Image (cartoon, rainbow, N blue to C red; front, side, top):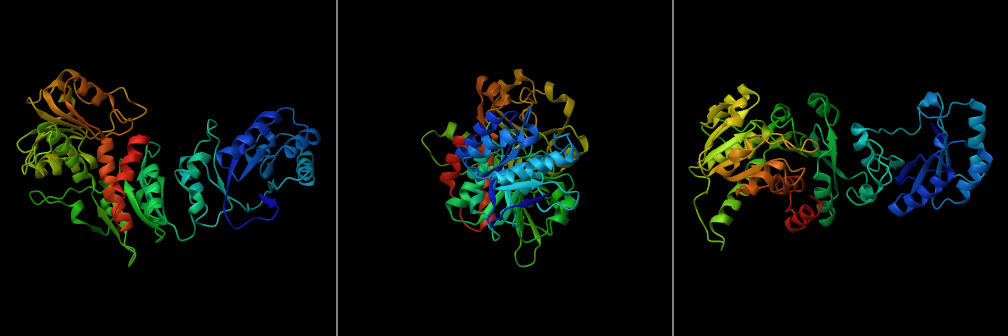
Length: 453
């Protein structure tokens, strides 16, 4: 595609408009301006009964911001199915009537390329860093798959501050749509005037990912489901935070990776372990010592700790609980994985299918470290509902939604509940400190958690 008009070096935020009438297009232009767009991409091929001479005059006479006119043919993925001469005539007319930019599809290499879909999301947000002309965003209420909204570009990502020196951080996971990392890390970066950006990174193949994104610009990563264990094989070093040896065995799970600026080596950390365990301990202490009395002994010491899930988050919980003197009972759908973890922490191994019939000790701790209950499949819980009254505390690593069905049922049964949001906040604070080499603005991050989750 080629564009006429002088392009500024500064990246601009653009939203595509695909209204089916001229009136809808004019209305959406005004909405786009209110939501923060710098210009709009006007898709003429979506307008029903389009008459170039009449409709272009209305559109361009009423434009409240710069307009890029697009009349995309079917051979280029658009809706226009007429003859090529008429299409090009309409585009030339748009230029004569004052369109700011004209998008002309040519059957040659395009001058501007952009990617949509979940895998293309990162390319939109990082456009200003790598010299791209347009950052595409969608209107609120008119989502386009893989495009951020105009509001999120301006508020959560604040792309107006991104430049070639911005350090890139992001979440390596699959899926990534549930992640709240961007709305937490990016405002914290801005608050401290740190030139960084945090984006979701949908990853299918770890080896390919680390091969492609090997630039020093990609300074660090969060690691989510299902890669917390597998990613250790791509780290050049494992920090003691990711090892925490118990009985000579390491956690073997990483949730944070930092690229060393000196030599580019990847160092793996684990901030999940202390985040989860301290969240549980603090909740127990608050119930036991409401006036804030100090206790040197962990409230987990000697407790039966029932863990469902032996993946990355489960390993962090298991090693953390074991280091506090808890007695582990472990379930996982992958029996060999559960056995490996049980052996590492001297825990009791159980078959996953027995979890629904398992009867815990009175006053035990339950921790869910599986995706069960995560949005959009929010109606499931990992254990039998009738056993929840036997637990003193129930922890759920899932944080979308903030209060899962498991936590709702446990609270109704009288248990102390700890949301995965608390673990998420604490591990994010640890990650932020590693990302920036400074101190995270904890109060700000907690305020964001309470308002956004």
